[in-house]
Length: 254
Image (cartoon, rainbow, N blue to C red; front, side, top):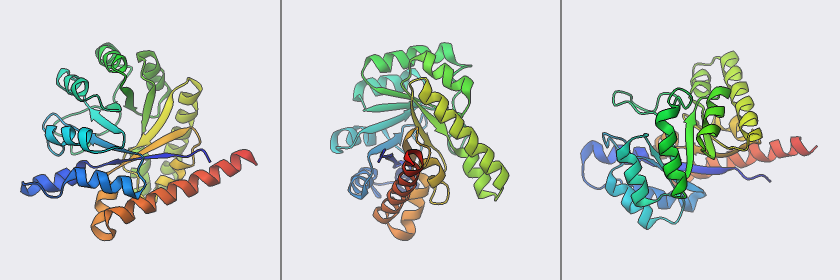
């Protein structure tokens, strides 16, 4: 089977911790539990305003976990310096605005090409696997390739929003865009990831896209952990992804 990797984002464990202060719940403990439950990597977004993950969290994650660390970061001098100091396995460059609750859409790799080229090049030369979080759009995919990023992460937010609103037509249109973008990006030699807003009801069709190599899922899993526990939530997601990928592989080899 063409195994699909699962990256677990532990940002919102830190959000809960920060609501009261102190040390609990500990996002590093969550990362360890995620590994035991079948995660292939840990994602953490160090925001400019430090609203959830802190600098100390990044230090501990880099030092204390054995899974690859994917640092989500804005394309700023501060975040570039932090990435170069800690040398995570991967860095996913995302857009960031202080007033947003969560990342709202992909970064404009085409429109911000001149600003991004230096950051991408610097991180790549430091042997950090760089990905760009982009919309499923051919222009953005081409820009990412020209920037020298080896990976793109396709934004699945619009697809998940359509599903949440019960709009079957919009959900299918967004799914078709993601499928086309994944195939096009892979044809250009890019590694394709996807994420944002995925849950049990939406991850399967994305997991079935053969060109996608990794899903990054966080908020849903942390929320579901309140009811079922983090271990059970991740194991269920892992099983759902594996089932969808196995069915896809069967269709592709039939």
